[in-house]
Image (cartoon, rainbow, N blue to C red; front, side, top):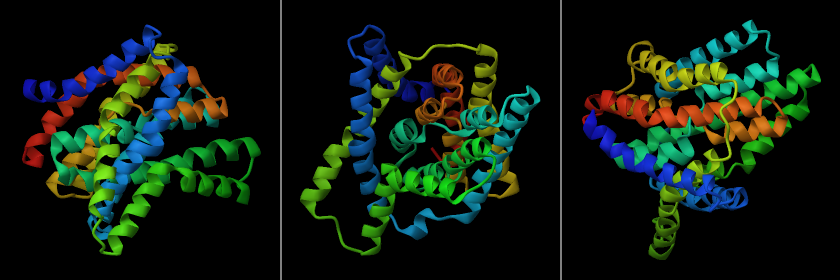
Length: 312
C-alpha cells in the first residue's frame, strides 16, 4: 500500500502546487480559467485523439463493462437522490447532489494518472467510463434540472442535451480519433509528434489546474458535502466493484480500471453545471474540495486493492 501511495503522491503534489499558487494569488482565478480552457480544448483533446486513433471501436465498446458500470453507478446515484429527497430538497438539488456522488474527475485526473500507473491498456476502459459519464449522466442532469423547471419534457431539452454533447471537446476528440482509426491510415509522423507534444501538456496542466481551481472553493455545509464525498470515494467504487465482479462479471484488468475510475474525487465540471443553473454551487464546491483532499489516501488504497486483480 505504501508503494502505491508513493506512486500516486506526485500527482497530488502537483495538485497541491496548483492550490498553493492559487491560494497565494500568484495564479489568479482568470489565469486558472485560461489554463483550464487550454487543457480542456487543446492538450487533453490532443491526448484523447491520439489514444483513440490507435484503438478500434471494437476495443472500446464492451457492453458487459458498460452494464456493470451503469448498474453500480446507478445504484449510488439513486441512493444519493433518495437521501436528498428525504431531506425535502427540490429535484434540482437532488440531481446536483447525485452528480457529485458518482461523477469523478476522469478527464483531468483519471486519464493522466491511471494510464501512467496502470499501463497503456487502461486507455480503453478509462475512455469508456468517461464516455458513459458524459453521455448518460451528463445528459441526465440537464434533463432533470430543465424538466423540473419547465414541468415537462420537450424537444428543446433534448436539443440542449444534443448540442452539449456535440460541443464537448472530449467527446469530439474521441469520435474523431475512432473515425481516423476506422480509416486504417497511420498517423503521419509530424502529426503524431505534434499530438504527442501537445498531449504531453495535459497531465501537468490538468493537475495544476485542479489545484488552482480548488483555491477558490470553500467548505460549507460540511455534513452534506462530507456525505457526498463519502458516496464518491467509498460507496461508488464499492458498488461498482460489486457490479463488475459479481453482477456482470468483467475481465479482471478492465474491472480493476473501472473500480479505480469510480474512486476518483468529484469532477470540477459538476461545479460548472451547478454554477450555470444556480443550484447549490457552494455545496458542490465543498464536495470537490473535501473529496480531492481525502482522495490522496483513498485513491491510493483503492488502486492498491485492485492492483493484484490487474496483474500489477
